[in-house]
Image 1 (cartoon, rainbow, N blue to C red):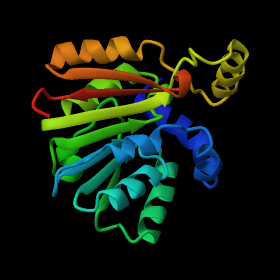
Image 2: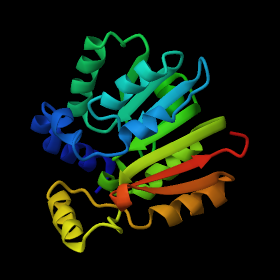
Image 3: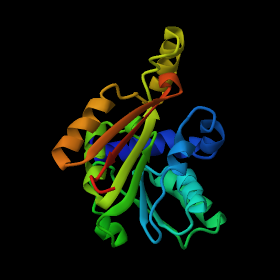
Length: 218
């Protein structure tokens, strides 16, 4: 599926869901707030969310770390419409800037006037992006010196009952969500290729997986 096709597909999925997305996802998108609590951007620093959806995470991050500037991209115009409304309602339009772009290839300088970011994060997006490895590489390539890329997404449920895993994966498949078994290996591969340090942490008995790519100086 090409970028334009994926954008249309995401708009079709979220044209209705976006109105109740945050209310329902808070019960099973585990690890998002853990990621936000650990962002710790430098004062005056820049934070980019790739796949910002409804803007929920950016709003939470902007409130938790008020001295940073925030940016978000999403391929879905429908989601961005909701995100812009939520950011405005939160009174954060002066600190959060949003743009439509493909996670696997975007010109941050053209979109935001910034080429690299102190913190980048991807929360429950890799499992929905066909070229998820390309999205990871693109994010890693946008890191500033002393920068860091954090990801959290569905894990392989490795320490949970097999029946739970089968039911969850079957349910996720209905929404074109595919947990990425190769995430630890790909994080390591990208780290080696781009001179970054990779980290991987299973959360909640493997329900979620957290990963990190950071510059050696960070």
